[in-house]
Image 1 (cartoon, rainbow, N blue to C red):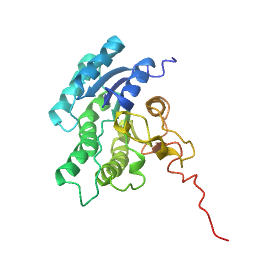
Image 2 (cartoon, rainbow, N blue to C red; image 1 turned 90 degrees about the vertical axis):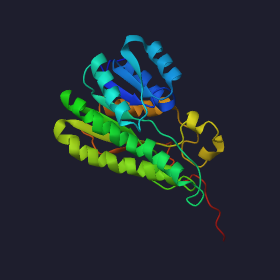
Image 3 (cartoon, one colour; image 1 turned 135 degrees about the vertical axis):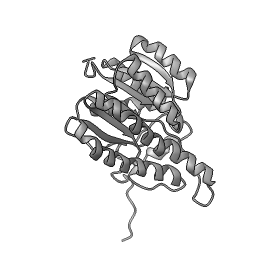
Image 4 (cartoon, one colour; image 1 turned 45 degrees about the horizontal axis):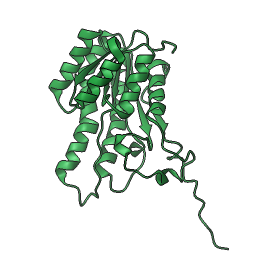
Length: 250
């Protein structure tokens, strides 16, 4: 690899598997030192062991302020001030607005929106000590359009899109860029039960890979020096429109 992230210290939430693990591996390959934050302790510890001295695992429940404080401290103690925060941890619950229990709705918002807010809140002083860096919020195409039976997820991802823009404005003076990634259908543990047919109508008719999202995160961390508050879509063209041609009568 080219060492595009040499000297970078990154904290990746939800970093034990899926998109988060792909980001961790790619960042480490490019020279970053990475703290893997996750509640999946066995998988996170195994990934850190695989990567050796460039990585540390830190148990991190993104809804816990104390966990966030401990994760930032752990990163600074191991590697120095943070230069990149990747808010990737997320969950999904299915159900109509009528069917979903309030506790389920709140849980999704706690992980997907309150968690990234806490992350920026706790990481900002460290990023400032590093004289700038990048925050990368992993939203979704559900932050760009609505989906039936996913009200909580959609609300959380639209909220994260808005939080990205506010954080970009507030942290610009400190040299911190803040952008969001909006993946479409990606093959991860979260989508393991989804049928391939759901991608048939999009221009690139397949599921994406975690590595394809990770490469966008690498671009934002290493190269996107004139982008902040911006949205980067990785969805096979799903939000562009449908490839299905409707039949019309004569």
